[in-house]
Length: 439
Ligand SMILES: CC(C)(COP(=O)(O)OP(=O)(O)OC[C@H]1O[C@@H](n2cnc3c(N)ncnc32)[C@H](O)[C@@H]1OP(=O)(O)O)[C@@H](O)C(=O)NCCC(=O)NCCS
Image 1 (tube, rainbow, N blue to C red):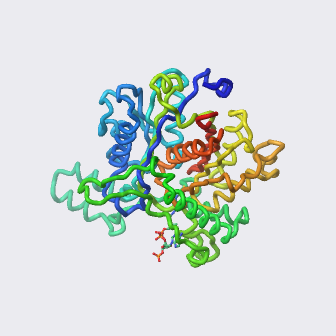
Image 2 (tube, rainbow, N blue to C red):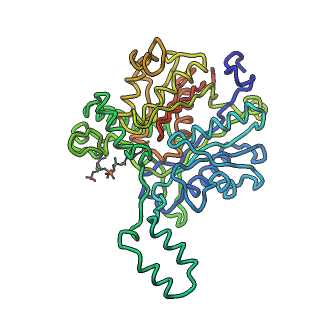
Image 3 (cartoon, protein in one colour):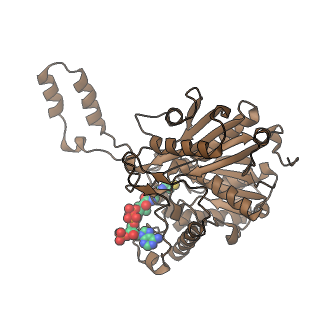
């Protein structure tokens, strides 16, 4: 065990990531369309625990998240436990931090381990955007409640008669910021305009990410971190790989796509955005001591983390530029020490905006109150196996996907450190500094 690398607040306990797995990430409405987030989470956790070889009795807890909650199974953490081979007595809970949800799950589990309340935890998340809740309008919801109370048929008829056609139209969930009324895409488009991120820069970024993801699949780099799913309930279809990665995308094809969030002047298209996705991902965390006592070689370690926020009305998805410097300070490291940077790709415009802020002295001085910018990210170290644009983005699962992907790559490169960032609704940003297995 290497001494001196612990974050001072960890009381000497080092949190190891000992395993990580995800389902293939599938575009919503495809092979996983009949599965709920709980279904996806349960089949993933069962496989993760079985593959790890860790006896189920060793676990002290499970934390899981789903960003768009299912109204009838809001406690996904506990539901996942009850649908797996884990003991039914295992305490579990649900957590949320929008797109950083499974980062939140992992850091909550890490905290429990550092506090000495637990020594082994499952942490992850799942999302089924195929199964997003459809809401009743307020007048319809009120009428349904009144209807359940009305005893006489004429009263019931009167309630039903009061409804207008628009009241009975279902209301789909919107990825809108409640405080600004803007969708994620509109907020990212605003950032592209304000930061001067061109359409061609976005398309080039998306193209490279697709190529890297396609290459990672082709060369087998994802084989051990993505499970094959024989899709219930019919068990006929088989999902082996992510189905949004396009090895054959070209700049010309990307340039043809119409802007979606500002149809007239916009630059954000289906090609340079992350798609709506279904999937699940999780990691197993342990105290280093326990991992060693069980003879497990960790994939790596959670060294430090930080969360931050910016005003949603400002630049909604700029959170990583606020969180990353704090996480690096807590880790006692600098951006230049990072062998890898994994940045969640909600939109190419958001990644390019974050990178611009990382490198900007003005941003550092005015927004962070720091004399020096964080620095330039070396493109050769950024999202080297592709990011959420090609791989997809099941909101609750992305963070856990990134932890595993980063640590396994650090292991292959014999690298020491990775910085991982996620932007999220509400102007939130998450950043984690990971140590490789050799660090
Ligand atoms: C951007 C978005 C609206 C696009 O949705 P969509 O229109 O259903 O997307 P599609 O997959 O149908 O793509 C539209 C077209 O672009 C094409 N396309 C998409 N990516 C492409 C690529 N890389 N290369 C070439 N063509 C591509 C598709 O083939 C499709 O063409 P078609 O109409 O001829 O079939 C949707 O993915 C979205 O809302 N994403 C953002 C999600 C979000 O807000 N996440 C939160 C961020 S944290």
